[in-house]
Length: 165
Image 1: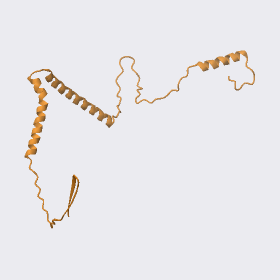
Image 2 (image 1 turned 120 degrees about the horizontal axis):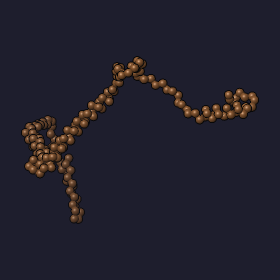
Image 3 (image 1 turned 135 degrees about the horizontal axis):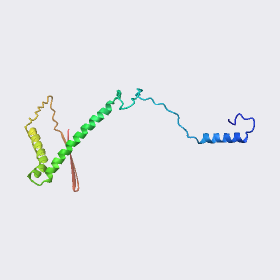
Image 4 (image 1 turned 90 degrees about the vertical axis):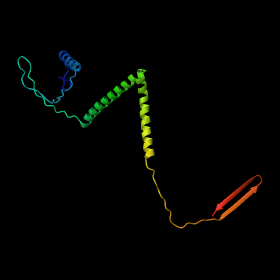
């Protein structure tokens, strides 16, 4: 019963029933509309009366993008590389921590390696053959021997200008 089709006034019982209906409708919880989300697999086989349910094959249709596989492989490589660098640093620092002959050798070893490489490069440069270039000039030779000599002397300073033409 609503107010839109009323042509006569309500009785007390009808008005009370209408008020209760409006209040009940206003305060009832709003339920969101049911969204039907499709699932990728639904097993409609009946369950056994007792015991475990037998396994059902479910196909895996996930596809890993190439960029995700590349990032995974790169992260494994970076992790392995960092682990190797960390182990090497640990070994070097263990050698540096002990003040023994080996500790001193661990400190000087990189410098000795650099000196050896520099010596090898210097030896290679010194043994390399020198480049030989012969330049031949052909054509007439002109020699100008005219010299214009201008000399100015004034007081303590003098100026000489030679122009060769």
